[in-house]
Length: 218
Image (cartoon, rainbow, N blue to C red; front, side, top):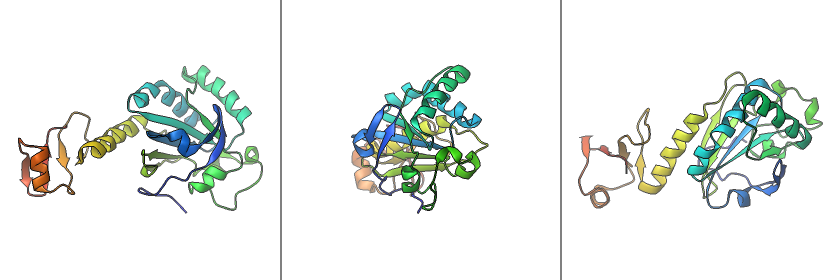
């Protein structure tokens, strides 16, 4: 069954390029991004892993951990990392799950329960559903799910933008409008009453409609 926003991210144990982890313990009290790949040595995914490595400091600054996933075994991950470094200029500097038994892929609804066998005998096309991004909050709830086709590289700058919005909402009970960028005006969340908003925003707000209360970003 596919996971959606608000679901608890399934916990699991798995081998990664940085050792065996228990996922919820690995996340700890912060945020995390789990992003999956159909197979190692696929061209689009190679560019993605390299780009994620280059912007990892931006995730670190937000208290967000990054972890990748592919069904290939660990030894293939190590070989792929060398290729990524040579072709993209930056090797992965975050763990990559070796989901060779398909356990995590099934838990997260990306592969069917009947999938089995040698993962290296499966083609990328057979794993085409392994092109997901999950943003997970400190409460271990899923906050964002993105699913991309194999032929389109993922926009991880957009993932950062969404995380900025999610963290702003978590800390200040605001929502962000279309095309919002950090530092721009925000909307007081509908869950906040006018009385509570007056306490939080004593200078008031712009309200072109009663339900649209716009304030500067906190």
